[in-house]
Length: 59
Length: 250
Image (cartoon, rainbow over all chains, first blue to last red):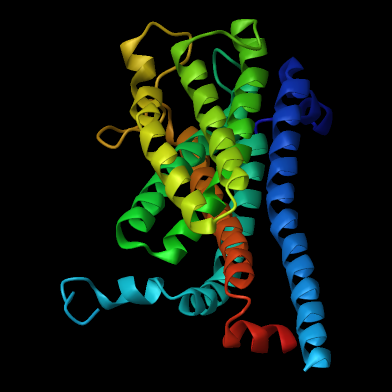
């Protein structure tokens, strides 16, 4: 550990705001990248399933 | 295809959307676990255990996000250009899809690189932004990504969209060596590259080992997101084929 206490860890030697802001933005970017295609997948599947049902009822 | 024996078999398999869908389905869990483990371990190591820099103190810990995201933003661009070129030359559908999926991922990591760079610049240089060669060329990389996304969505035909974005991506490739060598060619505030292929890093192992973990973690994360997007793209474009109908009817 390179910190004496938990408060020290949060403070990051006075640079806490900068360090934690960077990691928070990274977390947001990573989560958005994962969630976005997963939601798109659900949307594609429901849309295509609806299309298939429509085609079936027509024939 | 039988006359082209000089190409390995997997190259043609890769060209089959269905085969790609199946293989990415098998690979995804491994990369997801690897990305999660590497990124969590890397972050804990970077934030709590790596020693503080003797000049920059703890603000130096931003490097563990900044460098991996910058490397990934550039690698992603190169993959996009190469995939686009393969799509242009061999008219390979899957390559077009890969190139299309690269753009939004690359744009987001370019933003991450620029944002963490600005946040790091404030305590280190006293300014969020300077119009310096490294920063400007990185900003151009971000704009290239935006341009490619816009061009792709502006063209109705998938084939034409893929061709035009591939050409734009290839032209923009000239920016990659400019980013890389900007710190050597021009006077700059930006510090030189941390990792070089030919030399050992200038920083001690306790600092660069977690950085390497983060870089590999970011690559695994990219693989995961790439496969997620690619699979959506395959389903979307192959929706009229039999196997996708069966898959959806499930």
